[in-house]
Structures are given as C-alpha cells and as structure tokens.
Length: 256
Image (cartoon, rainbow, N blue to C red; front, side, top):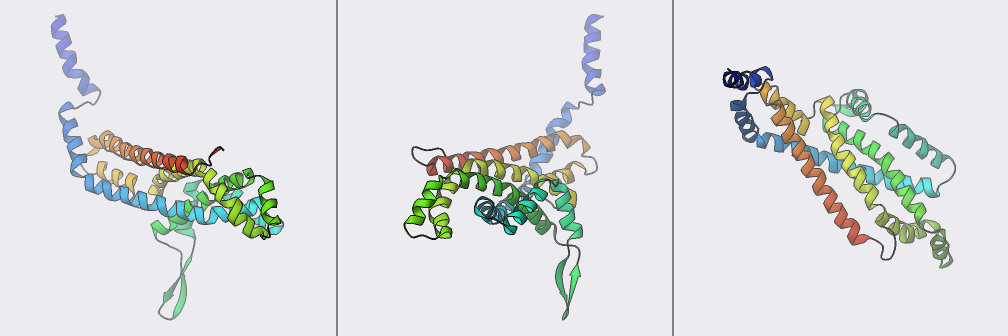
C-alpha cells in the first residue's frame, strides 16, 4: 500500500501544484521561437537608456556646476527643479509627459497644440530629466571634491573663473564621477521597464504581450525569467565596462 500511495502522490502532486513538466520544455521553446520579438524590445530598452542617460548628462553636468559655483536666483531655480524631479515618482513623470504635455505641431499653415507626444519621446524626456536631477548631484559632489586651491591657482595664472572650472576642475571631476555615473546608468536601465505604463514596446512590454497570448498563460515564468536574464546581462555588461572606464581614468595616486 505504501508503494501505491507514493506512486499516486507522484502523479497527483504536480497536478495539484499546477506543474506540467511536459509543457515546460514547450514553454521554453516558445520563448526561444520568439527571441527576435524579445530582442527588438531589448533594442528599444537600450536606445531608451542611452538617450535618457545622454540627456541627463547634458543637463546634469551644467546643473551640478551651477549648484557648486553659482549663486543667486539661477542656483535657487536649478536646486528647486532638481528637488522636484527627484521627489516625483518616475511613473508619474512618464504619464504626465505622455498624456499631459502639449507639443506644437502644424495643421497646414496654422500652428496647433497636440497633447499626445510619442511614447519614446515622452519616456526619454521623463527619464532624462529625472536622471539629470540625480546626475547633477553626482557632478556637484565631484566638483566640490576638487581642492579650492586648484581653482585659485588657475585664476592666479590668468584664467577666468569659467575657464578655470572648465580646464582644471571639470576634467578631474568627470574622472571622479564614474562610480556615481555607473550607479545612475544602471538605475535608468532598470527604470525603462516603467514605460510599460504608456504601452511603449520595450522589453517588459513585449514579454507581457508574449505570455498573454491565448493558450500561453503557462509560459509566464519562462518569459519573466528570460526577461530577467536579459536585464542581468545588460546591467552586468554595463557595470563591467564602466568599471574598466573608471580604472582607466582614475586619478593616479588619488581617489577615483
């Protein structure tokens, strides 16, 4: 009887837990057959990350310099905007830009406002501006880490303050900012999954489209695991490349 009970349990337990071993291979094969579909979503994720981080760098570096050396109203405005962006959930920014931010368009010869911008543009602006708010703090910290004496020495050689900041302070600050920039790059890469909220066909959205197909609800775990693996490969590769960059440009005899 014990042997019969064990054999019966071996048959029933997988059914009770929803395990279907014969379909597991089929589900992984389904993922493999749709690899190009997922790779297209991966390409969108990579492009969105690069565009957002690039925008964040272009805005964050001058913002950090203004917070470090500026004074008066401009510094106050930059600081206030940065606090507002860092304090707003990224999904709120993405939805706001996608549904609520008008952009000008032409209707014949008449300029009009269309309140619906493309998903990629809205996501890039939202992620880029939020990244700029965080990158500005990375650059502000590294700029302030450069000794004040170096700025004074550059001024004593006849350089103006902007020229001294550009040629003496910023090169050192950029080299020291790689670890903080690396962290921000990874965060933006993972935050691209939030654009799922506006239907942009990035990696997570395409995965969702796969396992919600009729008859493919059993492939949820396999698709999610495949997506997770792709995100891991992207973040791991990015971190290793930026580690090499940090090692290459580290200030000799000083902190990176």
